[in-house]
Image 1: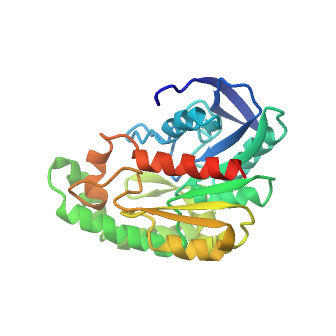
Image 2: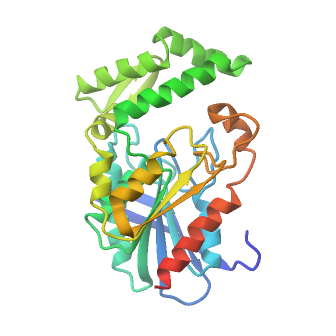
Length: 314
């Protein structure tokens, strides 16, 4: 915790139809009303802290503590079907996650304790945030590791990076992923097969290889043009780029900022990975295991907080 940081955490449950979204509202002890940041996940079965059962990113909880030290409130929540939130994660689509965030944003927009609302999205969350902004009155957006490449091409790029990692990986932990990839003819070819199957199906969940995949979620993302989403942005926006991002090409940040125009602030942090850690001796996926042993990069936390303070004071 940041030195001198005094905060309080309150557990909340917010309804979206028959779905209950559970989360934590972190506020400064200083009397409000306070500006609020709502944190929006990237892809995967993530809880309120951006963690899964096998990968502890601890992003949103770290941000919440720092923001409280700056007299900014923060709400982070478990995705539907994850943690204490109800619903079925596997059958949910991208638009379901958008609607969940809309419900949360409207809940806080009606609160006398909140003075301003900012939406912070990481990875897939950088698409969800501006989609929510089309439906809700907010003061600003923070896009952490955004991308403009459409999903089919992005999966092609990510598949090539993953295949290169598997080809070089050593040790028993790489055997099963390498075997699965080989059965599908390689990661890239496997992703192409998956996309064809998803497009030719209306089912929310499909088996692909040895695992169930979120077909509805993929299908909805395939129909979205990120550039058109970014064209809708009308509020101040931080375009936050990780210089060593192996999943969302860092060079796309400048293009996104150009689309948004004068309301965009484009910041690139050299050496930062998609997991918001400074990359070590290895690169890309090969370094992820070591990165998880380290906390979120302080310069990333500071960049978020500094931009928010500047916007709130205007």
